Length: 120
Image 1 (cartoon, one colour):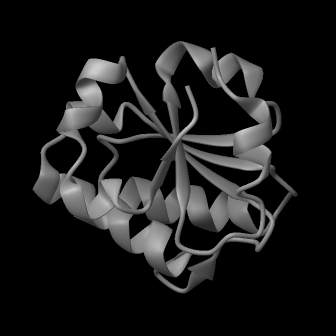
Image 2 (tube, rainbow, N blue to C red):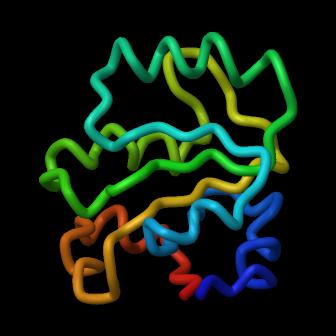
């Protein structure tokens, strides 16, 4: 069960993200959903087509615990800078990472985890 209040407190916070469980995505309305396994071209397409076209409340990176720490680095930069290939995330969008369970939190790289608030 997600802590919705804790998630909402992250609105406007730069260089932070929230971690929730995969099944709790359904509780977040108005989101851009990307799978952690997307390559750079997929991410550019998502940013180009969605970031500037409509207002979203959440930018969700799904199943971050399934990829290795080197692959997680591309998301570290997005969270830290709130920008990707010249496309800026809006100030009020909340970045959300999903994991399978509390046990798989350990699969998030230390560098990325330092930017996270666990909301379950």
